[in-house]
Length: 354
Image (cartoon, rainbow, N blue to C red):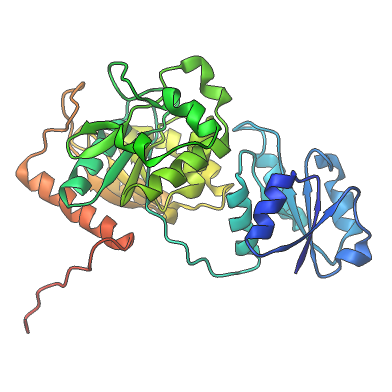
């Protein structure tokens, strides 16, 4: 199938071509007869939302992919719904070129053999313990013999209580210039068996981060570790959060039953990126704090699985002081995680005939 591209930047077009697709770049909309049985990819900068109905009528026998470029968490849900009603495929803002390639493969039902090693942690709200839980998993995966890099990618909170010689904002010029080397990862903070990159201390630059920079950092980290853990935080309006949602092989949400009102819009937002409740696993933090809704009922309501429940501990502790039984439970989940990433053999259950 040919892809007729109108309004896409050349870098993204090149990435699509490298993925094996045939792309025909257009300066104006092609004739409907040219695109019959093919795909037409247009951007919101070239075709406004108000012209989508007319576009659909003009190209009745073509697949249409609409790349919406207006950034903002709340601005595009209605546009997505409108596209669905017209039978037009939708790409949300902040989507990287690789995310667009994945969408094309999804539309054309191509098999994706790529297996990533990125485990993304997302919080349902500030202060929920996303960073602490990410550090817990990094520590236990490292204890299982894996090379682990933990990236602080909550752009609104560095996740560290003091400035260090290396941090996300200090590494950023090398990310922007695509000059990262293995030595950059060797120089990360050594913490309990894993390498740690504290997050962004320059709060004024949060909105300046670009999706391509984060994607490049993740790709380079993946080449220098067996497992990359990334703390993407709890604020969706950042380039890192969006890229994390798109690129993570496993997506873990740290939450609590009292955040039920936060989970609903979070799941709706994920749905616009072709992610659904079954694509997430939940970690219930402070599970021993009584609430009206139980964690199990909450998970059943949304359709996600609970991976782990952690009790409440006093705040401001770098490492959660888990007991022996709780630590074993975490290690069991870590082993399952490593099996899913192809980094550990499946454990054979002992049965009556063994």
